[in-house]
Image 1 (spheres, protein in one colour):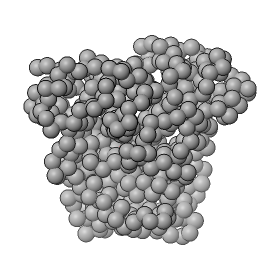
Image 2 (image 1 turned 180 degrees about the horizontal axis):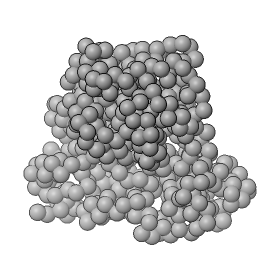
Image 3 (image 1 turned 30 degrees about the vertical axis):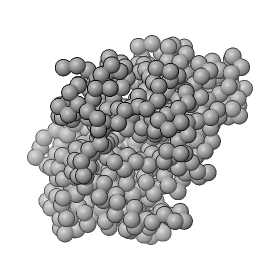
Length: 491
Ligand code: CS2
């Protein structure tokens, strides 16, 4: 079977949307670090829309900082890939041409630094997941004990971390009197631009205060809110699309029709005309970010742990259960809902309703296991900040505690049938040990896990209401199972 590539796209079925600009003349203006499925369905999609309408030299050089798999998928097909929007109403296929090349950082770090340092690059964007920032989530400071940071401080000519790559490229520009670029964080972290600025300038400070000051004065770090549900692509997806298109696409991505991007309009050296293709450019992203992180991602994580433990593979299956729908509704109305304020003109009830519809999209195979990954990095901004606010006002915390208890049950590493759970989390070992040391003792497990300050700070262990309510949930989970506990409470 032929691979998708530039010579075959003209012969694809006519309902597939193709790039309308002259791709052979397109030059790169963006380097993206972390070219996973999310970037391909989100920032690259908006950049493609801007290229289709307005042209401009905003091609993307993608890069992976670990595995070569995306490069191996994309390069043999001229970096073209299909974006498949799926819902109950059907599917829409679009060939995205915005990505011009894909590099693999560890194979040739100097080549990636050189690419980022090249003067035609105006923006370096990132989707490197929460843990890629190498920061201490509780303080936001760069974690100087992180092995990649230790390495990069000594070997800036061949960095390993995204932060090292950014600093190395900026250093090149600083040394050569070039302009700085925009560093555009697109990860689900509150104040993601500020988090990035802090770790980059703290790293640069270790090189020289003058360099760090130059970055502060010349580079920009806009905050962003990104939103689109993008499950990992499966072999079934590839087979379906191959049958539909008549060519094989290893780099295809499936996503929902909904998409949103809110960006602080603060660019060092220009940007694509994203504002004219649906991106909201604003002065302050925080309010949007808080609504999205707490309502969408908070609900997602809660459903991921409770759903996985109840035996559901996909989020849409969780949403077929009336008890879970009630749980999510109550969580959105009460616990998370009470801590967010909608901007003027924003219909928050419609937003919540729409979120539940998005979660129920059966055409998306969004695995609970996928969302359950890296809970130690996600819980602080998804559940624990909300929890602190509710505790301060003596407000509702029941479902937040249920979410934390389900996470503890999950990271114990053994499911309700006694099977091993493949817990993917940088703290997996530490979490497992905390649980193992307190077997058959839910109160001890809660104390041991909540005592991990990297996740819970120093304060939450002393919040008796939180510790007791979480313990009660965990006791119930062990006594009668997660599904029955949720059904008892929410049916
Ligand atoms: C999910 C997010 O995997 C996860 O943790 O909660 O990736 C979620 O699908 C996106 O943030 C939606 O915009």
